[in-house]
Length: 71
Image (cartoon, rainbow, N blue to C red):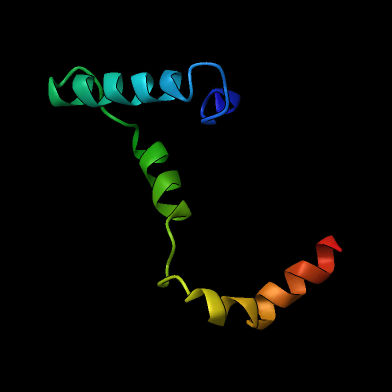
């Protein structure tokens, strides 16, 4: 499914859009509900702080270290 989410993929990400629309519709109708563990995983992936401005990010020590790791 991941490779189908790219705009450059065949269908331009339509498969993922349809999946999300289907889950949303099922949830509204009471036919589907996310598991508590799934919701906890989703929340754990959300940022805990606001995003840095681009110029600030480019000189942030954590970002600079990440660049060193991939160089």
